[in-house]
Length: 313
Image 1 (cartoon, helix red, strand yellow):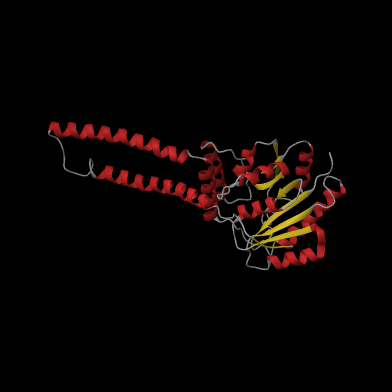
Image 2 (cartoon, rainbow, N blue to C red):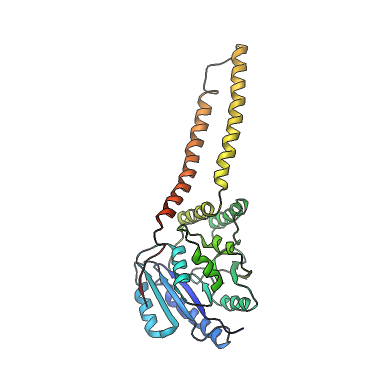
């Protein structure tokens, strides 16, 4: 097999502190891959600036001047989100294989060498999977495990302990290009393609510099995005729950009539107020779930661009 053309895609959002370390390490790994003839000599790094408000873009300009053709960069017109920035890199770049990696160096770049070797073995998708979550806080560890458990129970195919550190081939990208959804969840979209895949395990490190761009609020939002983008189970839960409540209400009605006929009825809230609270709360909750799905349909019908490129270097 001829050496493939590799693009290493790095989404960035306010990463001025981390990028000098990240760029240096990735360039070293790229040189090693080229020297071992695992990838073509014109392979490169592609940085996608997702609307940063710090000096991220200025650094990428200076990096381009220093490193030449080994560096490419795309600046989005505003912050579209991590998944959109990743998709932009995958769709806008030219390559035989692409590796996506975050800019914080928590995912060790040297694992890319093993990923490329797996590609040469015939795999078209190689997922970077964490061996453990020892560097995470207890809350983050619990929330991550709960997310993967819930996704599996809802029937959505995701790779446990895999974030967005992966290698994919051009064939996979061609399928992604046909998926036009606005609500992006690449961790579900890529397994959906069904191409031959494998995993490489690694130990995740602490962020090299800067602050996390995924606080708990964003993590919960991202998890909900994945659940509602790839599963209709929440809608089925509404149907099943409605049927169960109907049966319970029927039983309570029979009970209330029996008590009334026996002359033992007690004026109070048990048979009236309690069902009102239960049904009212469930109605509001289920209307919220329906609203989420209707909102997704609304966004999809608009067919707005998932990202807007402002500048390329």
